[in-house]
Amino acid sequence: MTRVEKDEREVTNDNMLHLYRQNGINIVQDCHVDDTSDDYDSQLFKGAQVIQNILEDKHNKVFVHCSSGISRGPSTVLTHLCIYKKVK
Image (tube, rainbow, N blue to C red; front, side, top):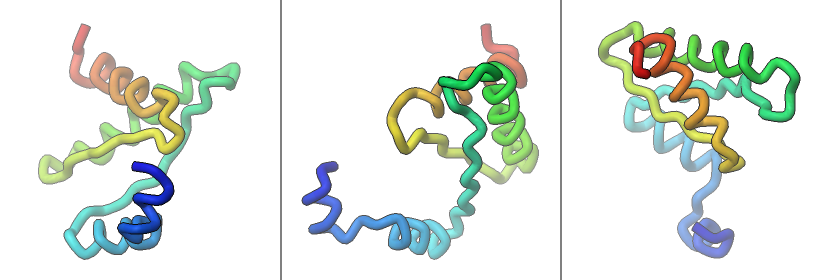
């Protein structure tokens, strides 16, 4: 979605948060992962722990994304799957 499309559709962070809350979606903003850091692996582990903590309540679902689009979200999810779901 381009900036023009976002402006035309009034897609702002505040509007999205309001829409999520209105529909019973809880927001957890938790960014542990910085791929330029020396402790990248421990940051991925912390992110995986956050996902696991949310999923311990079987009614919860998780949507993970990296707002910068540089694969931190998928890397964190893959780490979670490997550690907690034993995916190889």
